[in-house]
Image (cartoon, rainbow, N blue to C red):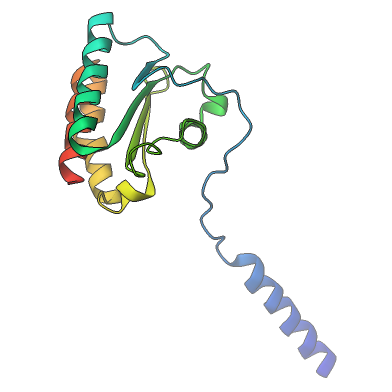
Length: 169
């Protein structure tokens, strides 16, 4: 009887361990080919016109002089993003480019892909302390996504980054 009870307890213990929910895992930076940073706006999918690209770069640089936030915009297509995993791609790119390193840790990177219908916004830890996940999600849902769906890429970036800049003061 004791051995039967021990067996049942062992099975129950194994089930309890195997049924527990795994802890959430942050995506790992993987060894994937990543482009070099060419400026504040890195238009690898070529969605901006030349004047829009120049204007957005100048607008971001002017803002950085005022608030010391390193803001980076990246456009990519499906050929740039392995396994269409824009989250892991954005994390790896942020690590490679050291976003925020020259601005006392204050930085944000917006990566979007019209061909994948995907967007990822990542903040440095210093900026995350001022800009909650809820505020970031609001920027994505209320500003970036509606404008990107209308192919208003310049307006989406300026309005979304403007919101982030304002909320991180």
